[in-house]
Figure 1 (cartoon, rainbow, N blue to C red):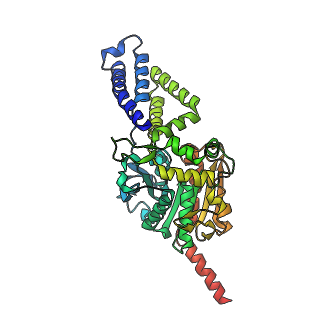
Figure 2: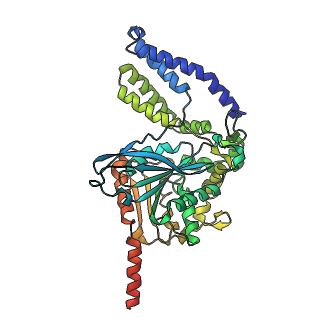
Figure 3: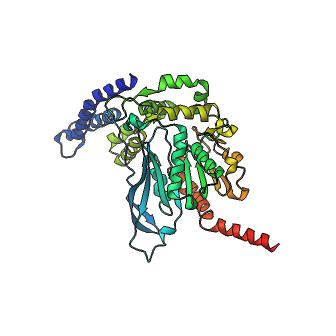
Amino acid sequence: MLYQLHEWNRAWLEPFSTWAEANAHMLSSPHSWMSSLPGANRAAAGYELLHRIGKDYEKPGFGIHEVEVDGRKCPVVEREVLRTPFCRLLRFKRFSDDAGELRNMKDDPAVLVVAPLSGHHATLLRDTVQTLLGAHKVYITDWIDARMVPASDGTFTLDDYVSTIEGFIRHIGAKHLHVISVCQPTVPVLAAVSLMAARGEDVPRSLVMMGGPIDTRESPTAVNSLAMQKPLWWFEQNLVHLVPANFPGRGRRVYPGFLQHMGFIGMNPERHFMSHWDYYQDLVKGDLDDAAAHRRFYDEYNAVLDMPAEYYLDTVRTVFQEHLLPRGLWDVGGERVDPSKIRDCALFTIEGELDDISGQGQTRAAHKLCTGIPERDRKHLTVKGAGHYGIFSGRRWRTQVYPQVKEFIAAHDGATKPVAKAMKKTAKRSR
């Protein structure tokens, strides 16, 4: 019923939001006589703020149309290469006519970026993808809003998440693939690769894990504390609701995006209030660049998706309450998840010094579990002064984190490992 009330409220606000937008245009447009009225700039700013507070935020596009490769602009085309009911596998394909002047981009390492299924859309990693495209073939998981998935397509659990990642890795080809997981998917990605290794399947050349809850017993944050303080039934009774009839997924049990958004805002209400106040002031002063930056950020931040209830509850229990992965007690589809089975795959963990979502040590804990990976193939980075988002987006990502990620991937790509193995075999025979 709460979800339906939210939809009624949203429908009620929509005409007021549209009315406020129209007034903002009339009072700010240089072609309108109303813009010359006394106090027009302040009134326009107020209406613009009212419009943005009341409007509905749709999923934004990636909007990546070109990328710089070796100092030249190359067009980029976004393609869907595989689809399941709950996720699309996207490829950002680069093109160039300067084959003689550019390196052969077909030889660039392939990277699968596993985006989080935790409220925001995969477009939150736009900067991550844009940066990687300069030297890599990039794929990304684009999770589908659960309210848009018909109930007839069945449920989606944490086990299904792991299976989806396995399928995507096989489709791309594990032998020539590097996997980057950001935040929440570090856990199912590690599980997927562990299971593939235990079965004797090919595994990716490297795993880059960024700000994820591998072991939330390390430096618990407010997010971790909430999960531990409440029993699982509390989350199910208070946060799980049915999708209303006006969506394709009507009747599906979900953790609604609007409730997740309230949680995001509730973590730092003062910061968001001041951000909107600064936006109003920027509009009054005519500082259009800062105002545009505010719009870009909140167009992304306010666009949220519904999570399947089964997956959400599985994650709360498995990752945050029972810590099954670090305790070695997690079974997926009847198979035990054992990261020590991973051998021919390098591991790079990255954490932000000021991360208030995944505390320091939570991602680094992967090294304690992946005991089969040689020390020479391991690396850890703590990014000084970076919060959660700073390790995969923004200036610190581009200038401090990405150069090391690029170097790590390059060091573990190509035929270096097979050559090394062949050398070892030759040496053994010579003895």
